[in-house]
Length: 174
Image 1 (cartoon, rainbow, N blue to C red):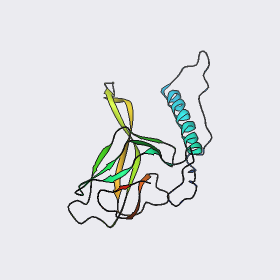
Image 2 (tube, rainbow, N blue to C red):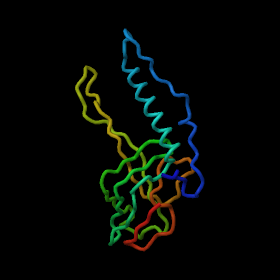
Image 3 (cartoon, rainbow, N blue to C red):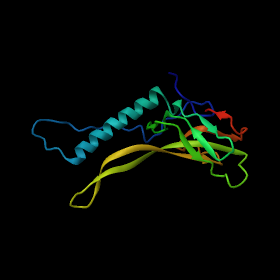
Image 4 (cartoon, rainbow, N blue to C red):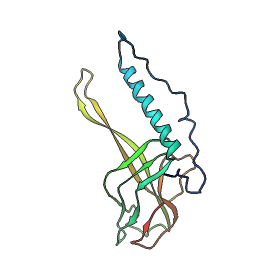
């Protein structure tokens, strides 16, 4: 699979925050493991995977995530798919999703785009002496229709480049 580039056709730049020295815990017999040790191990594995994502796939849409305007102009549909954001985080959309057109009550913007960003949500709370604490973290996404171009350091993935409105019912792919 070819490396992805940004919408201007230039090779994506790996953000400095992703380029840090990997550090992992050293396990040995008799070592007392703490919450911090397990968190460090997860951070280490996440960091390595994110670097690999950026080095092999690059930031952008890997598959799917096509944007289409529904007839009547009230919704935008994003097809199921997979993307990698500029920090190397995976964004998985397991099924088509319908997003309300944010400007349905007024004349649609002449120029618009669609971006998706990685989002985490705490889930499955369990009781503790300090009150309920999430026992899992769900990795999700947030989709936004934009009417201004994203900044150059934006960590969202562009699904529909910001530009002139297409005819209703057409499909746009990045």
